[in-house]
Image (tube, rainbow, N blue to C red):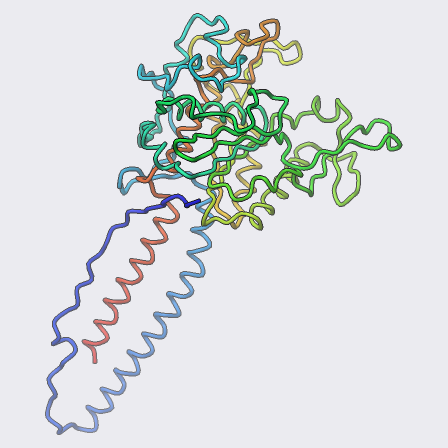
Length: 448
């Protein structure tokens, strides 16, 4: 499969060679005084020393600058669109009303789980569908389905994670399917219905020869059922230093999108007898935050050793906030409008850990830091409009809805009119260094 075209529009500086007279100085009279010869020799030595010092400074500068540029690649999500010289953090912004949304009709997309189609399940208001994310200092590229179908041709997109990842997977399929005339050309590769019970689901867009796949791996690391002869309270373990046994299936994707976090809670771990294991040793006293970090470090090591960054673009989506009014009693109050304040939901220790781990990786990872922006959207949860109205749900999202915006952000990174700050800045530094060197050498020639 071909790789994504990653074109970066850089400012070109014309370095026009000066007149030949620069290099063809007229030869003066052969009658030189000894003093003049010494003076000229002294100037030459100064020039040579300056050149050596210059290259030492440039070399030292690059040793300092390049690692910091690499770090900025992981730290910042600054993007420049449409050839602009200004950059903006696409996750810093606000929700604005946009009547051109939603991007698709869930009832016309066979890949939306019934439980996420809120309108079809009886929700009467549709205001939650009309919100678009507006970054503070720029605009996200408008979703152009035909253009995206074209650039995704012959590609393999893979989602890995929990049910939130599956929701985003369904969303992307429906977004892209809206531009396909022959709906029958889009199908699940094994003929499976979309369900949370299957670990692998893959939808093929045969007219464009690409697939969008989902692998269920809620912890990302290996989950193993314990022997009945072991410690009674330990029913299963998470082997934190070993990635999920299906991880080999994720290699050779063109786009990898990960998430994890919703299952890293006491009720889904200790409450069901699941504990942690590292180096073949059971760690009964290990905290969940420490275990999550260890698991992410295992994931990052796998990415750094298994993934070819020249082929695969890697994303990790941060924690998705829930909006339970009372989680213990499973009480959920879905509003009609987004919240005006995040009420403490705009940050998460899980998200912080993702950002910190990605910061130190060799392979570039685009962190989709959607925690703050999603914290405003209490209005967009499933609530009671699922396929089981007796259970409220303020964790999952209606489709269409918030996951569509997450996908628009992913697609913005794949858009051919963007440039990542670090790569752009690196090229700018290189161009500036070349220009400075050229000017310096001209001055040396003039001096000689």
